Length: 323
Image (cartoon, rainbow, N blue to C red; front, top):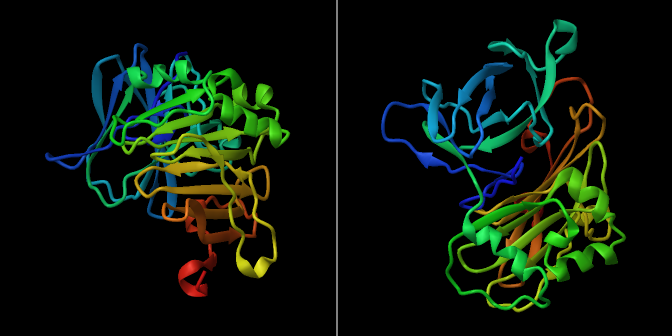
């Protein structure tokens, strides 16, 4: 299966999601611009219950409507398989090989279903979106030539955003791979399993989220960025709440970068089922060139109820505590 890139800098499991506000009836559309047939399933919160639906077969170059009503949810989840393969972000929903609508995301196996991995889509308050899976843009392919140069030369202050997923340490810029060596990471094992994310922004800056070690859960990433106008990459630290008396950390679990807000979030699960854990969000501060902790949320009880980590009870916020 070929790698997939992010256009508009939204990375989801190596695929591109282009989010376009709609102008017709409120609907959710899935488009496929990859060279392979894709089978789509979606998941969402319906009242008090999590619901999953599938399948929609979408041929290359086609689009299909998978939700024909107003999108009342800030988040949707999707699975898009080619020959049954898909690597998601750890969000689990019940599925079936046959067309299905399944209420509830727990006890899947005992009810005769599979429990499969989905990826998250954040749509905010929009009532209609179109999601498009596309093949890598030419700009992403050019990163191979840059990977042998260190330091990286400055990029023009304005460029087409690009994104890519890399499965080999040699795909990384040399300076970024060296950070992994300095941290004692096993990139040769972690990257083929999870993929490293590279994102180029319109201002010419580049950011890489790289898995350090392979693991079933809580895959820790390090973050390297070359800000616009700079000639080299730097490794970034992440803050802990002041009252915890903990040192800043260089690794963050299950890292996710939001290019629209310039934030990095991470979630550390407390158990294998992912129903509890610690969520943190860090905001990039360009003036000081650092990431500032803005909130931390925690769900202590591993109770079998699956909530979005960003909706866990608030543990610390920069607004309330004064940073």
